Image 1 (cartoon, rainbow, N blue to C red):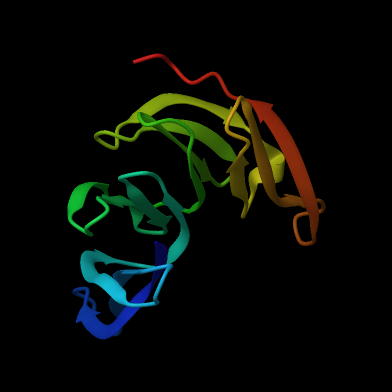
Image 2: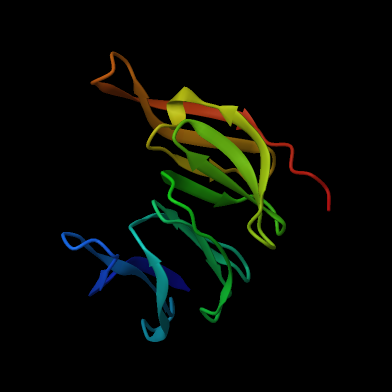
Length: 164
């Protein structure tokens, strides 16, 4: 299954006379024949920055927070708060790793609650995360050098996923 995301193209008035925003759109496409499996317009407004796909969980994150749906596109949970989440990775059936600014932290994949603990990773700014399936999390992003310019950077972290 291939999952794509974007904006639905319909303007939603967010209560400000001078501003309208589009809602988040997710769709799943069959990898074998290209047919549309499902398409959903979710309630949050904002932009998707990353999507993670697990066995039975699809998670999208962005400036709206985080939204999780099952393999059929039905919403499981949402953690909708204004944020700047740029990266997400599923590291176990029970946990996700989130990148928000320069913070990297665990989120419960079952209900969307944050662990509360985080690691500050300067290289994570505007970054994405990649998990090797064992115990290493790679963060690719940009390190701000002088307040203006950014330099591409990569960091490797050991992940200690709690046992459930």
